[in-house]
Image (tube, rainbow, N blue to C red):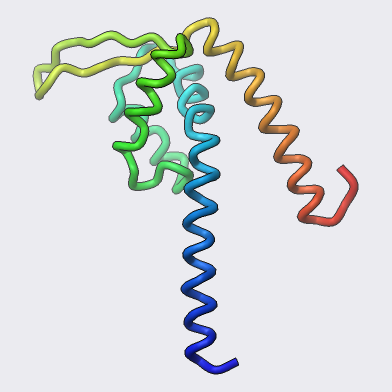
Amino acid sequence: MPSCARVRVVSDTESHLKKFQKELAAGTVAMVLLAVLARAREPLYGYQIAKQLERRGSGVLAGKQSALYPVLRNLSAAGLAASHVEPSIAGPPRRYYAITPLGRAVLRAWSEAWSDTRDFVDAVLKGTPP
């Protein structure tokens, strides 16, 4: 394959990968955020959530901390998370989030659906029966 064709294949591959990652993230970010809130001992504000995700590795929100705020607002509007604002000594007021009982039930359902989907996709990719 000529080198210019290899460069185009690499570029096209990267483009398709970025699109796939964006689509995958759109479907998993809410579940990941609910999981973080479910494991928290107290309400968390956005930066704390982002730092917890950062410690866990690159993942779907790597370098996109601002992307979690609209999802947190949507979770709150859907009744899956509760939020409140507290003043901050070091800057603007902070909005804290905590998972609700409905959020815990939805997280359980989403986790089961995720597990089933992951198992199916893994089986197809490996060429084994699910």
